[in-house]
Image 1 (cartoon, rainbow, N blue to C red):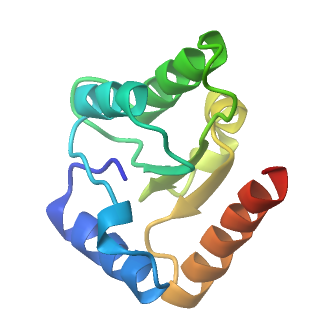
Image 2: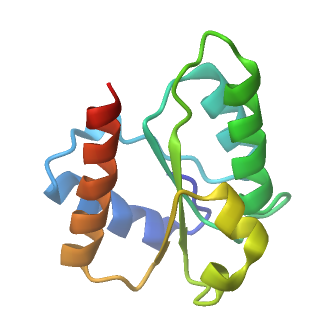
Length: 128
């Protein structure tokens, strides 16, 4: 999860833990550069990405992560990157539509968050 807002990070972590995801499997970073570095060093199935980040926006971070996976022959599976943002208009952004696998607004109810994350995880399981 990439988010520079501490409260949003705590809430999202709580949602993920309520889904039964182990704390050890939830990685959080609070800036764009660390997100790129971690994604290049570790394998992730899903990345929740805030859009408004200091230094580099979430769209650019997602592009860099996907480019890294696409050019690395050892990395067969590009992680699903989900825009997780307070920006209600992100779905209309063509660049965002091209880079993100899904988009969620942060005010999403916990039940819908859970359903959408589980659906994404199920698509990953079917690919393996």
